[in-house]
Amino acid sequence: MQREEKQLELTLEALISQVADLKNSFVSFIYKLENEYDRLTWPSVLDSFALLSGQLNTLNKVLKHEKTPLLRNQVIIPLVLSPDRDEEIMRQTEGRVPVFSHEVVPDHLRTKPDPEVEEQEKQLITDAARISPDVAQKQIQSLNKMCSNLLEKISKEERESESGGLRQNKQTFNPADTNALVAAVAFGKGLSNRRPPGSGASVQSGQPGAGAIIAGASGMQQVPMSGAPAQQQPMLAGVQMTQAGQPGKMPSGIKTNIKSASMHPYQR
Image 1 (cartoon, rainbow, N blue to C red):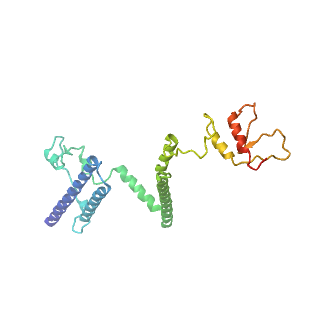
Image 2: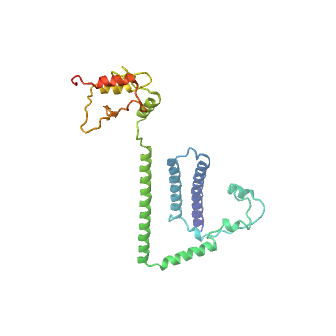
Image 3: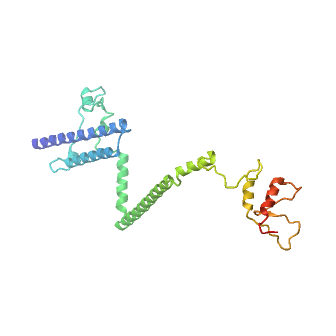
């Protein structure tokens, strides 16, 4: 009897120590989430989860050890219930339980879930026992297929979103060329100020571009077309000239130059 009590006492001390370490890890992790969330990194979160997982596994090993007595066979009976504040309980529970009365005892000394929860658990176990192995295997395969299709769709959406983001971020123009074009159109930057040779030789002021037309016509010969009416107007560089007295009449100086330029040296 004394040996069993001694073993129970050692087991409880080991469990209290493991639970205290687990509680400290939870407190530290919750503190990080609430106060250091702005600089919290994912590797740090994974390290905290790994620490908690290892401590839970250690606690389960202690409970499943062969020398650990069956705690379910132990009965805890409250000897004193009082609605008054108990300082010792406050110290033991770190201020979470101020009194040990009939209102808090059922919750803190409960070894089973609520009757409603226990009934639902029994119903689930009964329903699972009714399913045959073949039906259960088919349901498992169907669920795995649905999960695989869902994962494939999620992966496809991720790939499409990544490719779309790359296409949007890809640059399709040269900023230097664009800036040079805008500067040339708006301010004439980079454009040449030279005129073509022979421009403006016999052109009156206020008629830009006429000299280029005349210079281009210097090497042309007027050839009459057969069957054409006598009133056909002469063609100069592919442009039909207007007759005298009609709107758009050219100045006399330009007409004289056109006539002299249209005469071929060998034409009589």
